[in-house]
Image 1 (cartoon, rainbow, N blue to C red):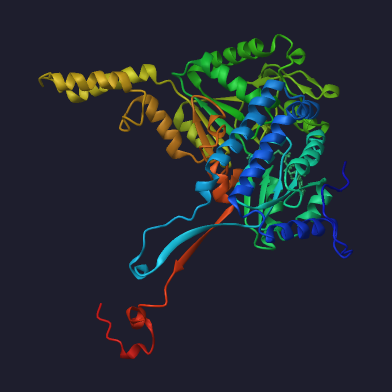
Image 2 (image 1 turned 120 degrees about the horizontal axis):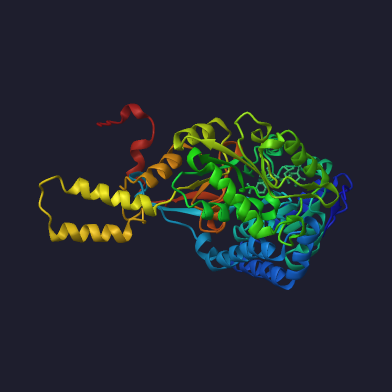
Length: 522
Ligand code: NAD
């Protein structure tokens, strides 16, 4: 599989070019022809992309199963539906997104028309990871098509069945000249990266992200880097631990822990850490049975190299810290959903992104210590905060009553009415942004004192699950963002135009030299 295979390349006879150069030359020629500019063409391509997904659903699900043993429902929910929603959203909105916008005019532009044109960059290189091979590539492709760019797509060599299938289907359904697939491993990608693209959209590890950025710098090519990191979960002492376990176990062991936004480690309040471990154990058994290896609902580790990497972290973690799971089977690339307790910051398991089904739990004194630990690490792709509001909501209400009614002050109907409204809506932080309950203090403290790509409060993964929010990392977890209109914007050069007529010259005379003759009284 390591060899370069080019799909749907319209060869020219220039023998001087290597395969990567040839591919780029042809794709750039397609872009320069202007074929991608009419919005109607883009909508048609997006509809064809939807056809591709609808008509080949079983083949796509099958390929994901062969590469990662992904359960069917998981593949539908986390791969196919996500892309279909992206495509439907783009079809509905691309007309509006592509229109020029008209900003307000500055004084010096009073006699002009002023607008911003939406210009595609050109040829985008898409380099992608293997863990959600369909979701990532096709979601990005939706934005590439909608914004009028062309693309060379380099799927991961580590999900070979899915990558091969995409390389067959994309030229069958989409314009062959504009959207091309390049299959290959590291040597072939290295050759490809020498070329001058107009944008690189890379999804993968931070380490390779640096290689990509260096290569892009040679040509001053802009990059969007969707990377990984250690995404923490903070569990406050007032949380409903059964609910925390249900949500975290789902998000952590989805795709057997090989999700970029998966909870990497838990920072749990001291008072409840033992109970949380109990709930995690019960939930793993509830979801996957007493022998999770037999469960059809668990994917597998992508390959032996990753298996060994995760196994070596497990071997470096003392046996007495094992709280749940721990079984491995290299021949089946299986690692059981595993939880470790009593983990300390310096332990090997806390060194890098785990990207597998092992979950360390660290006990902390509270939100202050959690913030300190999070800030001692690289900025993560995601942060999850669990803190219960209901009980604290009542505390808040009581605080509010005490604040409003100083001893001796009279009760009044309007004030009572206000309290009733607060009782009903105390959960809605938009209505009462000034809430000072403990719940909000904890959540606000973590939100404002830490930096991460995104945040979900009282659940996991959900900030990344739809096209209405920008998705991306910060610092070591990436740069740039995409999903929905954010992909369109990321792949569009906003070109300001000042359109001036050839009249009103006298209004401009003050700006011309010789300046000494002007009487500029400010
Ligand atoms: P990877 O960086 O090893 O590979 C990604 C791509 O880079 C592949 O197409 C691969 O062929 C290419 N590549 C690998 N090594 C290269 C090299 N030396 N030179 C040139 N190209 C090279 O990443 P991966 O193992 O496929 O994915 C796992 C990582 O990706 C994790 O860190 C995960 O968090 C991250 N990830 C991030 C997102 C996101 O949206 N932020 C999504 C999925 C995965």
